[in-house]
Length: 177
Image (cartoon, rainbow, N blue to C red; front, side, top):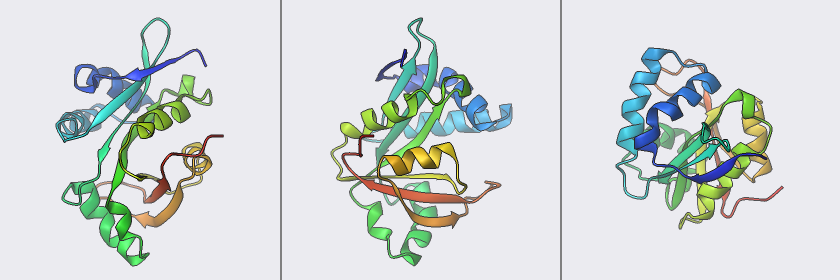
């Protein structure tokens, strides 16, 4: 892999990161504007941190950010009933949440996503990690499974999201492949 993985001052590079997310996730300008405010708010939470994948020339081509889970945060309040229905609600405690992980399509399948998620979780004090992903068989879900994540709840509906999500969890440290 010819990319450098390292800590990212996400608030200072939010527009670069969201440009990657827009391409990787197919977001329009209005969605990017909303997500910009969300990212900036998330990064004020205690324990929030981010890592980036940059080219040797310094171009940001991937990023991950997350934080220790807090049951009062919006994401937790949405997923909690789905997890409870599967008797997995305790995953919301003592977990590090992967809030976003995106790699520019031109740089996917090179190990950047794996390096980003393992780097951020390696420094987590929590014994496990949770995340949500679109509930389809995708390269992202395959990556998460290869790292030890398993489905905790499926067909999770977020307000205004057009597709259902799966909530996945893994013990830390993540598996190495």
